[in-house]
Length: 214
Image 1 (cartoon, rainbow, N blue to C red):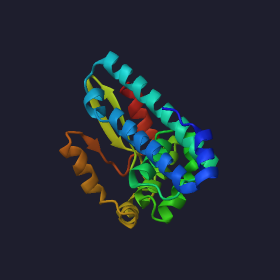
Image 2: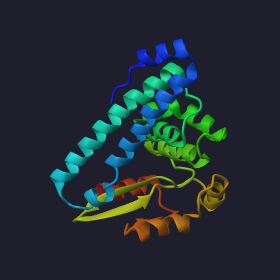
Image 3: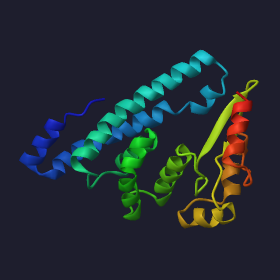
């Protein structure tokens, strides 16, 4: 999906920002649909043990994400965060950044944090991206939103990435509108996903477990 930024720029000059905002909103809503559509069968495909199917799926998802990133990053770098967007358009910006590489996540995190602080996004969105950045930097997360998985002998195991000051985790989660950790784990279990939450597990121990089970 490509965006004609020249067209948008001309629309701003000729007709004011409202028309360009409408055009951008439509583009972002389509990006939201593409992002969610490619992830619809994630759990089923990952747990299928079909190597070729899994590889093709990862390729398709990577291509979708890259196309989405090109468009969203052009918008943000040219206009900043557009005003008067629909909820799904705002969510699209968050999802694209959340699914990007660490460098882009760190670059655009201040925009996500500001949008969450002003009510454009949920506070849990900013917390999720913050946790993801910390995990990618091999640091403990703060809100328990990030998990990792690995497959051994045909069985996929899921673990919550280690959390800093885990005794205060539920308090932090409550402040940003997330349920207690026990409820969060139960959601995975109801989906048939065996999720392990071990507050005493260190990053070093988890990485060792991953290497051992490769």
